[in-house]
Length: 499
Image (tube, rainbow, N blue to C red; front, side):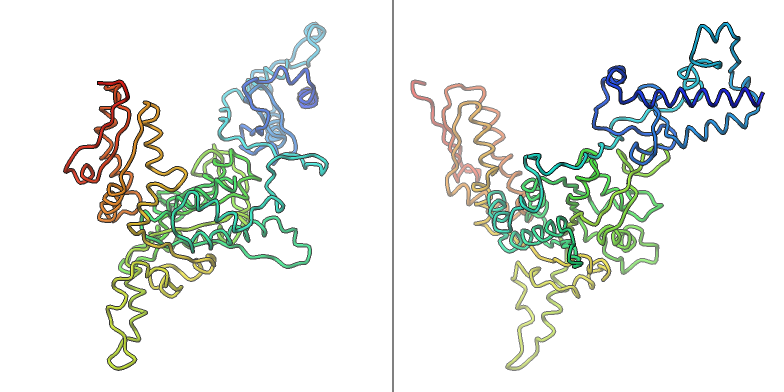
């Protein structure tokens, strides 16, 4: 019986090798699953390792692949069973061997269906892109992202000016930090000098443009961007997202291309919610513990990341990502940080000629620009975390004139969007200067930053957008200051020739 089993194993392995060798044959490729993208790696249906992580991958039938190690373990299990009758396999007689040259125990497809038939196939969104072969120097690659095509800081800032109003210092700091970071990424380190990462910490009130600046920056650089919310992160083992989930989002943004994701940008918003809780006796699983978990990501480490999922489990394939060249940008509003800054600045206030008024900084809307690391430590951020964010800068609060410029100047300004919407109905839209000032004044009272502008414009334009499609005679609509203040109606101009 042992001799028959050994013969069966040898014949089966020979058939598997034949399938593997014919995999690269053009005629064989035509029989593969036509819906499978050619740039995706196969995934073992048993251990969930990818094609690049194993020696060989056996394609038993479309959607079902087994790696070399799992196949060997399966064969060892069969060899230790002692009897093939348990598996439902019986030897064929000599006459059947003459009619079927595939082996004494049937074809490979029957065996694969018997042993591996119940294994689930791997969804396409959990398959990594195949690594591209090294490009030859003589080949011309369009839009190649390298040190020669890296935009200098003044060009990055000029392009940011087209989309972001104000925040001159913030745009300057961010442009220089990003430029230095990608110089570090492309550095070959031939002289032995290693450049440090330029991770950033942005401080600013809600609606001042933190997320919008990062989105615009990633779009201009054409790199993948992942935006994560720190409020959903918890310590490993608790309900919530682990810190590695931010890398899973980046991998998805890079279309499961690990090499491209390792040069991307991760923006962690609401980072101030991770501050240490000073008035609690319970375990702080969503505060200081998450800061500790983020340390290895910010510094640079090889992390196991699930592909196509936010959590790790046995049914999700894993891949390794190196965070050394990933730029991390953290942002938060840091409420009541201004009180900590004022308390530090007012330590010198006293009675006398050199004394200062205790309310000197009460009307300073941009007091966050005077922040120091000691203030952030007092707020609840641990020093190890702050040490990995060397670039710290604050965004200015928006003024009324900034609000007016946001309405009109950027390439995708809100008013330009509505003008485009009405132009599809062949109607022109115009806002008076007084109306723009009134809208900006309303937005400042709501104290939600630039987000308030959209809400106010939606409210103003609701009736107009509803009524215009009814009347084809309308040619132009002018929004007046009285209409914004709800003391009048918009000015309607009919088309020439209309009654």
